[in-house]
Amino acid sequence: MKISLTKGIVMAWLLALVMAVSSAVADAAIRFTDNSGDTYIVDYNNKSEKGKYIVITSGGSEYCTFDYNTNTHEFTMYVDGKLFAVRKFRGENTLVCKEYGTGMDGVYDRGSDGDYYHEIMKNAIYDTAPKAFLCFLKAGGNLGSDKQIAVEISGDYKAMVYEGGADITVVLVNNSDQRYYFDYIDFTLVLKDSYGNPIGTFTMREELNGYMEAHSTVNRALHFEDSDIPALDNPTYDLGYTTQGYWY
Image 1 (cartoon, one colour):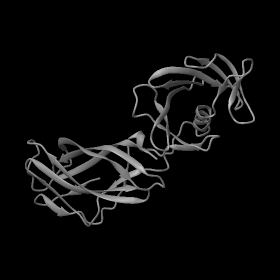
Image 2: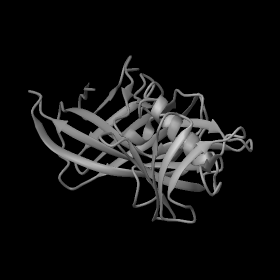
Image 3: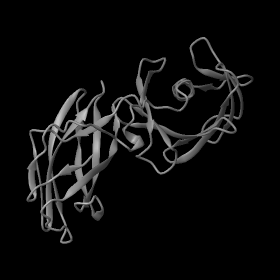
Image 4: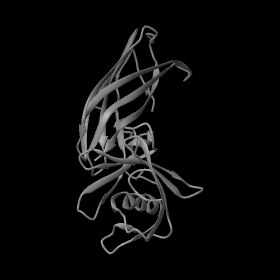
């Protein structure tokens, strides 16, 4: 997105162009309900050190994290940051398990109640994690890129660049049907000369730590401050961003 600025300030007419978020954590997560009726969410993990993916309750509490090996088709599961199990499906109704937590190694078959039971000892694996893994597999590992958080620069707002600083008003747009919790957004401003050549890259972090409701918009006033930001008569700029947060 480029906006031409005259004398450092100009109305950004008719710019309703939406930039799709580039951070994977902004993809919509997979929601499911286990056999007890509790709702869980499978999302990208930005809370724990281990596991690319996370299973959380609808209230945001961590249930487990996991990695998935596309070559061996194994799920490596962590609880409280510790290795808990390595599990692999043999069809939807059977799990082959190496257990490091409270369980027992072996083959588990799904019972009529949806839980999985050891074929000999009848120890149970509750259906929550297996169901999360099955939802993940059925989605092909895609956590819902059809929904997005976006940023707009509207024709109703001004943008200003001056020596040592830049002020840009943006609109955050939640196009999904789910709430989104923002930790922060990292913005990157690339200033360019009249020929379109980059002359400086400047970053800022907008701490949010709050929710954005489904199908809602929020205005944010961004302020970049850096002694290297030049005062130019007719600069252009690109504005990019990534988000840190998770869906509810």
